[in-house]
Image 1: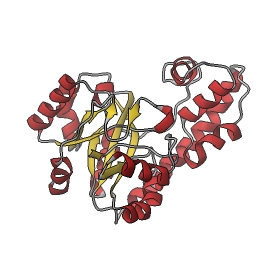
Image 2: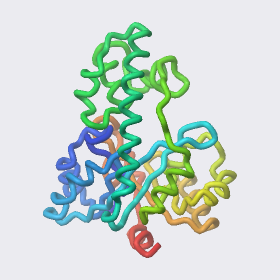
Image 3: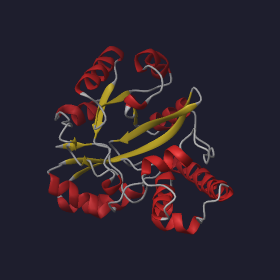
Image 4: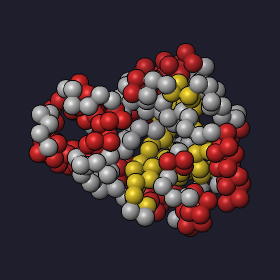
Amino acid sequence: MIDLHSHTTESDGTFSPAQLVEEAVRSGVRILGITDHDTFSGFDQALPLARKAGLELVCGIELSTKLNGYSVHLLGYFLRADGLGDLRTWIGDLQASRRDRNVRLIARLRELGLDITLDEVQARGGGMTGRPHFAQVLIEKGYVKSMQQAFDDYLDESAKGYVTRREPQFAEAVQHIRKAGGIASLAHPIRLREDVAALMPSLRTAGLNAIEAYHSDHSPEQTALYLQLADQHGLLVTGGSDFHGAVKPEIHLGTGRNGNLRIPEDVVDRLRAG
């Protein structure tokens, strides 16, 4: 099996890099992409363990970008993980922006009467604390009953607790990935607020060269649409479960939601060739 979209405790997953490697081996995944948000740390830690376990590891990252005023996620894949010095420096700037946002988000939530501290949130998020870790604290303290409610009431872009952070423009992020020799893939296109087919010419102009056609959120009909768009616009195809561990217990590594994910064997071969 192949799974090119997964997360560790270095971003918003619940499996450590070592645990994720173990889970991949247990599940029968032979090629695994680690795509933590705004960091390569999970991949860096997992690489020697994967080599020892005979697991092929693909270096990836997931970035939050701005497109037409709203957030769009972009995946970057690096089949050769060397020579990423400039990109890692740029990613460090994004991490600083995330930390600044977290300070302001705590202040905003406390203004709304929620008794939580940044130390409590960072204890769950470690070096790459994000909104899912805020949600966990809100659940534990009884302010909300679920992750969904935490985002709906406080953390989502339209919620009363939301604060902005610097997210690069979509085209800027694509260019950083491509300049580093990477493949820039539109993540889970089903989540876009605009029609993907209508957007595709402008995304291609921005330098996008892949689309995540296979994903746990995609129906067979949606996957077929994204494969058709890939063929029409000359895009490479990526795919993965978007595994997060206990945060999304219904999503399983390699097989997605209720076995709805099966990534063809030639996907990685085409990425290598592309």
